[in-house]
Amino acid sequence: MKRSTDRILTTHVGSLVRPPEILEMILAKTTGRPFDQAEFDKRVTAGVKDVVAKQAEVGIDIPSDGEFSKPSFSAYINERLGGLEPRPVEARPPSRTQMNYPILNDEFPGFMAQYNTMYRTMWMPMSMDRGLVDDALSRGSGERTALVGPISYKGQAQVQRDIDNFNAALKGQQFEEAFIPAATPSRQDADPSQVYPSEQAYRYALADAMHEEYKAIVDAGFVVQLDLGLPARNQVLPGESRPSWDRLREASMKDVEAYNHALRGIPEDRVRYHLCWGSMNTPHTSDVPLREIVDMILSINAQAYSIEAANPRHEHEWMVWQDVKLPEGKILIPGIVSHQTNVVEHPELVAWRIKNYASVVGRENVIAGTDCGFSQGWNMIRVHPEVQWAKLRALAEGAALASKDLWSK
Image 1 (cartoon, one colour):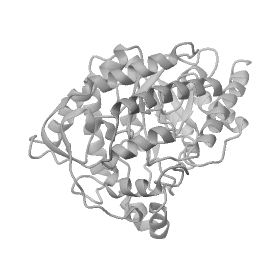
Image 2 (cartoon, one colour):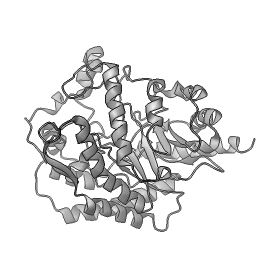
Image 3 (cartoon, helix red, strand yellow):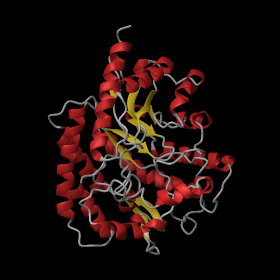
Image 4 (cartoon, helix red, strand yellow):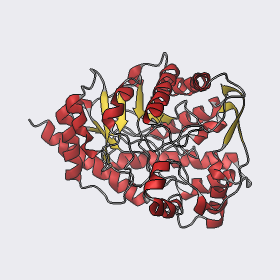
């Protein structure tokens, strides 16, 4: 994996705002309307080419394909895994779509009630049919699944399509490296008890299946990014609405074991892991401190770790690395700009944040990134696309300022 050997490199978490022409077809598929797969593939191919060119224009060194082919950062694997089937769920008004964060719901009931009515549609393109959007939301975003048989991988054609589109888009562009995000083997929305003897057996079956996707990405010459957070204090577990931190930590360690099983045989220097404390623009008062989970993060068999650092609940945590030594050969990808606010960071602020991390782990071990994806799914657009690109440009400009200071001494 490339390092910041002579300047601070820039990247992001992977998911970028999908253009309306792709969103329209994702919504059509989600709501069961007529769907032309060939036309969708054509639009995704064109979209990936455009988004890769735009990343080059604003100064990103390590791009992704924007995850344009995927309805969301994790639900896409429903189409790539055998043994999972969608199940109809009771339709409900979008205003009642709840986030699964009970502590926040208790601590900020008024805020969460209002936020739940708008966070999925706030930055949806004005050209989108609002009736279609509401219909898709009422169907539970198409992310409810049932386990109906042993897990297997059947996404060979889809992952190859993503690889081919990305390779075609990269031709003629100058980048340091490129990465493709992939979901971690930790689906908790399906009950495994009818098929597997334990939760861990289910996790390992998912890991065996996802190993095929990770290997395909790495064999194609890309870095693979495992893309899901460890449980935080404000989350739930199957059958437990208010689990203790000890229970959440136990579940996290089992997830880490499954991640590493899925990564077996894949060179560590071709893997990066993204940790997310929840991508929503909420108070984040129940986020677990980095210090309490940094050992788990570092136990994942990846060379680079992407962590939130612009989020005001975590910006100070660069100081954790004064006490926790980054292992030899590892890389940090701190989120230097936020995906949660439409305020564009000043390049001098970007440079300051980068230099904080460089001061504790070494300049060559820092790649400047974002806190999370700018659109984790079709219904989770966090900022207006114009702001997304302004933030990434500011990231590149700030990295150049930091590089000037760091390499002039």
